[in-house]
Image (cartoon, rainbow over the protein chains, first blue to last red):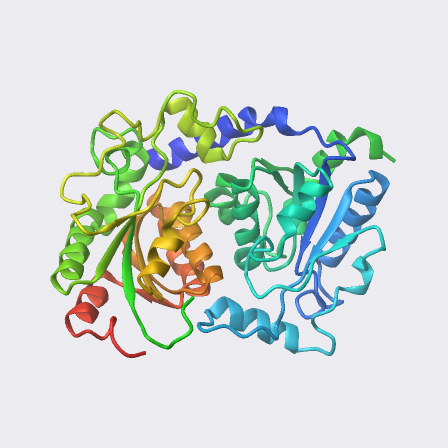
Length: 207
Length: 212
């Protein structure tokens, strides 16, 4: 029981420590959507609406919107189970690799080239392109949370971004109280906020 | 990665420092329960002995040792950096930042530059050092199950390595975190999930180090 108590205290301490980071200005904030592809978010997915709301909110707030897509055609020497799961899902429907229609990118959005890696930052030049736009705050969302979103979060924090997660916009079985968020994601992302809280911190986009 | 099909394995040992593994370490009060539950100290020693006995390449991936001014150039700290800056974890000149007795690197073994966050590959020379000698396969052990070990494994997978993780040669900040990670996450991202017993048997029979 002692380790759990220490971990709870640590989360609370970090949460307070990073409050000052939540300065989401239009210029410096981007929403990074990882693998919001048809094969991974079917029309029936409960994740689609929260993601569409996040995108709509981000457009009103004039945040950058960034898309990264997994490439189901990529060859590698050693496929891990994660690669098989992604490949199977993306190939399971027609055009499974294209972005879900409800989340369709607009010309001003940044759509990174398809990638063979789990992390959106690996070998894609994404970091440089985000730097060119002056982004410091990233809201990272997407369906494959334990596979590609997790790898992307770890790399983003490592690269010096302030990372915010909104549990509603991650995998369907995740919420703020999920053990996976407490165990692992909150050890990486500096801010884990409900969508409501995030909106309230972003004054300009209100209403 | 090298282009051939030659298989060459390294054992990567992450962060076997006193602050995690000693009863006097700063993080023992949270990590200790998991370390004891999996039998980490004995398992790490046994894997290292078995690896050295068969001449397997051993590589250490050490965490950043805290020193005055650490991370002061960063605008947004990684949570582990914020904790480290406040609690002076793994001090450069102190007990906590030293290798735990019996788990120190030996002469001829690789020691990479220090990782500042959690992946042993991020902004370090680990990949270069492993590539220089044609390593294609990694067995990754040490601490912490769902942070440095998992982050190092995720980087390794993206860099093209074949990755084996060992469920009782790693430990976490609580037994529950450890158990959930090795059962729910490791089977997704690792090419192979093994026990210490399986690693040692595999090294003895060369099953882990030869052919594919």
